[in-house]
Image (tube, rainbow, N blue to C red):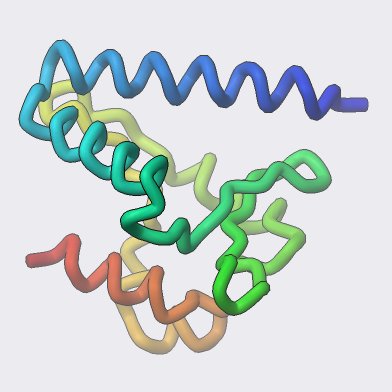
Length: 125
């Protein structure tokens, strides 16, 4: 059985390490992250999503709609993503989105939500 508190602790540590990485390597991006965090803390903007750990998987919860962004059982998607994940050390990127996700048919058949579809479209610009 997975210890949820341990997962939360490791997730927070990972987040903080990532923020530190941006602070040291990409200060312009870090400035935006820091500004965003301050806006959230000072209630200048509302939190739209909550990252939740359920049944051994992460999922995004849309606070305004009170719905999960992805199906609650994300194991099938996780398996597919793990198979297709590749690390490109030259570009410092990790590619996890299958190319067929950019097609409307995939979005309809695999319950890709509007926000995700918009994010995919914006990533192509």
